[in-house]
Length: 447
Image: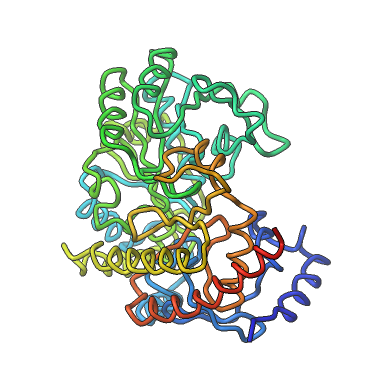
């Protein structure tokens, strides 16, 4: 029997009387048929207010890399809560977490803690500008670097406002942004090293840093083409720019050394969020001593009352120890599971005539839904994705999956956690088979 959501609908209507727009993050309104309300989770399992059970592949937008409510994490939080939840001062835990990051990530010579990756990105930009004496930051279309004024410039412009192939537009999706912020950025297309060289040369001597998601995970799931990371590193060294890896999503999912270890590059600064705190509001900026020098000297201000919060530190220490304990076997285990799920979805798509084409490294992947007549093959950049991905059709399949108890992120991203196992993949494919059958029948009828 298909899931229904009467209780979530009731709660959402109630919420709109006290919470602006009924949600506390705008993206949550995307969920159809209604923003869901949840009561509890365990491992890869999640239950909503209507009692529906889901096999979860959203996993808190990737933050719950260790599963829902892991016992060890709950115990670590409980122990710390009895000792104190906040001091606005130092504790030994922050040293222990920093030392773990140093041991795990070769580029993490020093770290600073914050409460969200959005804050860390802004700190990285401030550092880069102070380090170089330049104002411009180069970023890529489709990459997400937090919701602040600077984080979303050129993120996901509508097709009629893309700008030229050589000169992507510098737009912000929100009203109320300081207009001058747009002039502080250079936007380039992802996965085109030759184009990147031309963009850097056009603004040579004016760019403070290049920032990127190592695998673009916020718009499709686009791994870097061969030579891209080495090109970014080369250009940064040539022109004295800082290389900033935004590993908010990829951090620790791709291994103890994060995506930079997986792909073999060394950034100057690294943004860490989500999995570093296991669902607590915790983030970190890691980097070389040279890149962090202006914080050491006090010339760059980095502050925050809740920075280094002991509850979050206790959670992070436990989380990092889970990744370290996996050793060299990580991320092979979750990658194998993810690729098996991808293969199962491909088989179901073929059986039901659905043009679904999962892509990504397996440990995280995106379900691309091809438009009629769209070319086959890997999607490589943001514009290619918009041109080929059938968002309305994916939304329909996503709702069919949801109503059968398989939950993926609305934008099509699937996250494999350390809590998922073979039996969860088996059950997800059984449920998905019913969803694909229903989708194929209903979408064909609608067409």
